[in-house]
Length: 96
Figure 1 (tube, rainbow, N blue to C red):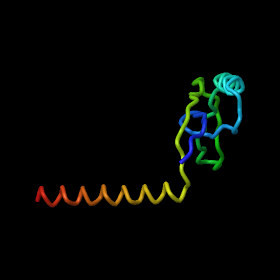
Figure 2 (cartoon, helix red, strand yellow):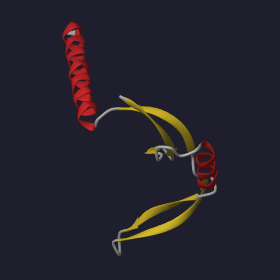
Figure 3 (cartoon, rainbow, N blue to C red):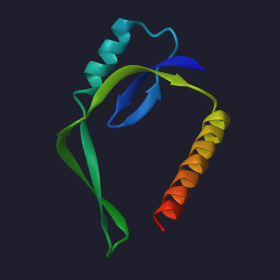
Figure 4 (cartoon, helix red, strand yellow):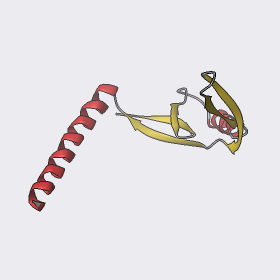
């Protein structure tokens, strides 16, 4: 496992380039905070998207996350889901 500096923009995490300075990260985060979100609605008559500027600002957070490989993450998620389902089945059988 390794640790990455990340920036979270409206709930989506992005890895920052390795070696990016704190000053550059602060400048990037400050710039991103000035953006506004563009929303979308669907026009069922034309099949096209209707875009609008939202007055809501963008949520920006800088942090560090521990990351693993995609394969390891999937394996661990599958194993934990299997354990969860076994517990649920056991609970259901105990209630019956």
